[in-house]
Image 1 (spheres, one colour):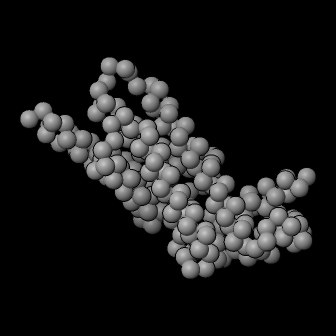
Image 2 (tube, helix red, strand yellow):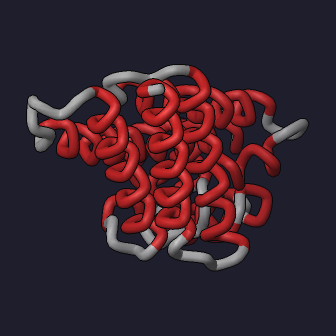
Image 3 (cartoon, rainbow, N blue to C red):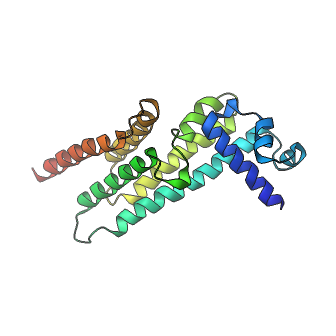
Length: 202
């Protein structure tokens, strides 16, 4: 029962923090929405920052599991005869297709799109919740490593390009409401890879 209440607090916190922002949500609102007593909350979390950290960890696990599954499916469907260069392109397109689905609320496990929880939280937590800010930074490093693991041939410039385009697409989808921003990145990536291939063949 104790673990159930702890999980309910985490789920409630994550939902409210993601929807409204960490600094806009107080402990009393979390208690009201979850229906859990204040004493119980402080039994599981000694401070708001601890709850914020738990919410970030829950989102981190959920997001990485989803993205890893998406990229693994792409990899498993690749013909063996493709070159690593061609496989790279397929995996990268799969990444941006997954982002497009997320932006357009086609990924139930990630809830309605309100930008990146870690980008949003990083700016709010800086200075006030330093551990949470560090966790946001660590999440981004893990995402970069995950992308690298799925690319058969990942040099640093390509990885930098993919990672930075991904981050830009997320911000553009949130701020500009450009829900096709990830698909625009696909065009850029294809041009880059075509030029890279041409240079190798010269």
